[in-house]
Amino acid sequence: MSGHEAGRMPEIGEDHWEGAVAHQALEIEGEPYYLPLGDEVMAFEAAYQNRLPVMLKGPTGCGKTRFVRHMAHRLGRPLVSVACHDDLTASDLIGRFLIRGDETVWVDGPLTQAVRSGAICYLDEVVEARKDTTVVIHPLTDDRRRMRIDRTGEVLQAPPEFMLVISYNPGYQSLLKNLKQSTRQRFMALEFDFPPREAEVAIVIHETGLDRPTAERIVRIGELIRNLKDAGLEEPASTRLLVYAGLLVRGGLDLRRACELSIAAPISDDPAVLEALFALIATVA
Ligand SMILES: Nc1ncnc2c1ncn2[C@@H]1O[C@H](COP(=O)(O)OP(=O)(O)OP(=O)(O)O)[C@@H](O)[C@H]1O
Ligand SMILES: [Mg+2]
Image (cartoon, rainbow, N blue to C red):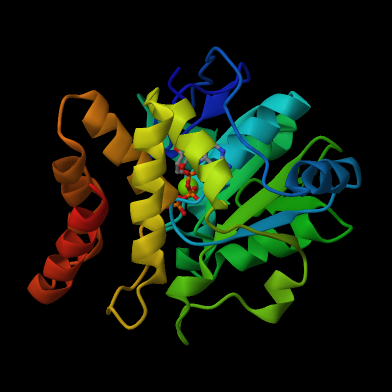
């Protein structure tokens, strides 16, 4: 029932790299549920067949990560995910020498590991990473498909199965943090947005096991919030939050309280905005 499962393919999370412990491949059961909203599955497959890197654009909580997991499973490739942050450097991606006992050993970073194993490497919110990461990304994303490990002198040629996928939320764009054209223009881009009503209802039902009428009310609340203009919301309520509301209802909360806690409260700290959101929820729940 729950969609929180992942594909059968090994998946390597960023946690395995933080603290520089050896990476572990996790074998997880089941196909990650993803409801296609357009031709994104076909487009991603075409990119994969032609060794094109892919950029997923869209607001938070609209299915980008779920889509990559689904596609990794579909294509039968392992997935290496890296959550980029403002301290993430090129060597965090490539790897580093570590002292183990009296030995100094080279430990591959997640990107190197993905290149070696022909995995799909997902750099989440890539624009957050330090600028020096572009030096690694560029030669891997043009027709060279090469990666140079300066510290060891090794040059890796990416196998055809290797694929680089980045995500990017244009809503967070700032002058300081924007993807350079020379980086953008190395990727084909798939745009993600909140699903249309029927699809979102289906997603909420699938992810929570709720009955249809309740799922429809939750989605209606999401729509109303998204339609609020000038409400001072940085980003509208995501599909993720609608799923949370459904899970709280499944956990025994009444619909109104569930929506207040999971759809309204997380998206704003402004008391006036919250009051307006609560009032809006009360019209439906
Ligand atoms: N098309 C879809 N099919 C199935 N589930 C979806 C879909 N879109 C959204 N979801 C649901 O929304 C949740 C959030 O999606 P996901 O984690 O993929 O968001 P995201 O776009 O990666 O967000 P962020 O940018 O914050 O990482 C998923 O766990 C899933 O329950
Ligand atoms: Mg994500």
